[in-house]
Length: 172
Image 1: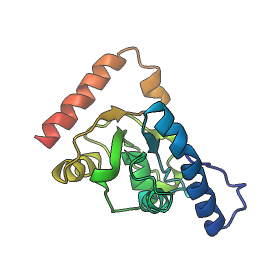
Image 2: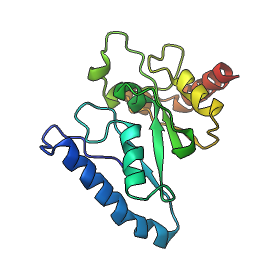
Image 3: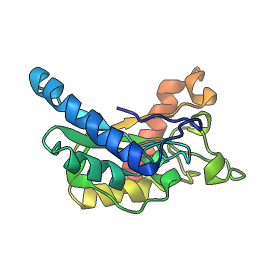
């Protein structure tokens, strides 16, 4: 579940938090009925209503949803949010992507800048993954590059294999 990402949202922080807790409470019985776990993905953009994982964790606990919800740790959004807190025990999935453009300020980074993770990565993917793994995360890691240069590449399988090799080698 991804939060609203709009500059037009006029709610106060308290209203946003209240609405998030209410939504999580309403989703709990649906998740129970279907035997599934909900994944909450904070988006680190400044205009996003839920930027930080720490706020998501607070809302999950306030909604008594710790058995129903886990976090998505997205390395791109973690970097944008400027948050240095990790929640490996509450993480259900990790998304990785890199940004290599040196001239981009973090607040100007968007999904279209997200490439595969490589040596020029500015987001600290390896450090983030190492922290999660060192603290006990053993779940899935998925790639989430949105840049046209990746999506339209004719050799996308080779590029993905190269990124996987880079990450594996860097973590070894």
